Length: 187
Image (cartoon, rainbow, N blue to C red):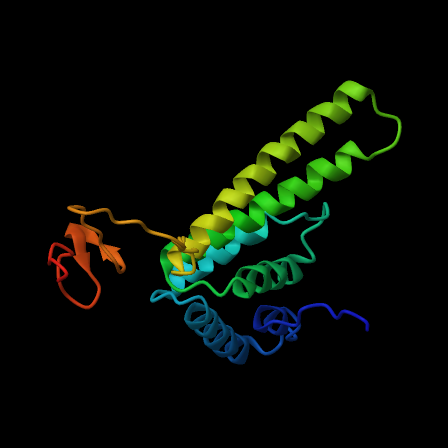
């Protein structure tokens, strides 16, 4: 299955012929508003800035004739993370940049005719960035409310004469789910 290049709304604007001046501006405004909604943002200017930041963090050739494609790729990468709001979108932009840097340092480490010292330096940089990326992934999950909750299963409890036991899920203030404090005596 052949992967296709992301054809985002930003790329569609880049492909418009220059002769469509006012129409181009209207289409661009609609596209940017759609991007703003897709990122869960309220203000178009914030969406434009963050997508611009993400585009600057992408690998780019020495010429700027592919600026529309870079913006489309940047938007697609951030949109894939499905951010909802400014914090998640800002984090997604940072994650795209960190990932790009990881790939860059790893590709430098595998380039031919390098000393072991240069290879080690690039691998060390990539490794630090991978740790940062993992932390960012955990933070994104927390922001989305998807962080894992620990579950402890107690298989056996012994309560000796005169002892007390609490059974149930314990929340803040030693309140049991379903009511009670756990201090009621069993008869």
